[in-house]
Length: 384
Figure 1: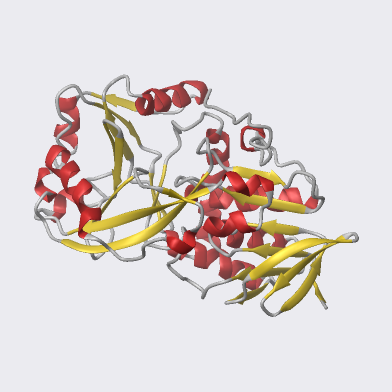
Figure 2: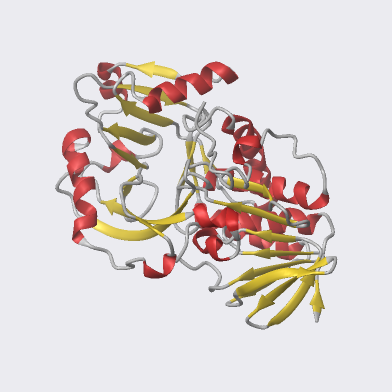
């Protein structure tokens, strides 16, 4: 029976990052992935993910991001790849909308630089946008986007260079305590390890026991459109943008892909208990909410061709905050799950945190609000 110092289940962004950090510390690491390398069935594929610092979801995320940014730059330096473009991030909405108020509160607590813009200034600086009556915006120069698929591959390459062993198309079927070790059952046999890290994305529910039973999966669709005036959407002129539209929330990117401008609706779909039943087909109905958003805020894209659509999966926790830490009641088992559609930007620091937890070191971060056992007694953590 094989044995490793640490086994990582799931080689998306979080698992690949954790594997890199653990391998660099000299541990004999095995990474298990049920699909092929670079697959597009989960949450870590694709060309771009937003990154921002004045975090409206919870001010305690800011400390994690202040570490994530230099770690992304370090990964760029090690690999020679451009992964992070700070082209800015603009968030639109009514002045008292919780999203805008949350950004301002994070900026106030942490002394972050933001700009509050009125409608006239928004349209002057970003002419592709029509803010609408009563709308304002918060602009953050620290925001931008990450090259998602490329970043995951960089984590993996660095881990392999440091000695990690990756096995693709090798699903972890189950795990259990076996004396002082954890026994992992895989499609290729059993493996023993004193330390197990579970970063299984939408499939985490199967492997996490009670903490995972609160997780759900949501199908999200991403769409690309060819602009009539490409220069307006160049990253030197257009930021990552987000807009609160009543009960809906939309986000998009400057034209950094050959297919054009990427835009999607955030949340708004059915929550499922398993990724197995997700509809993988692109439907015309998926595009309609985005076109309705265009008619209100970006008229120049309203009738432009949709050149590409893609499916991404969110793994949702009840309060939409991550599950990150030690598995309750299980020595030597750690997890990172429930990233709820806003986790990719944290992959660099989550990998570092997981490796500190595995080694028994202090993480240096406030992680109480992300404790994996917070739902076990029906007392979910709320926003401050």
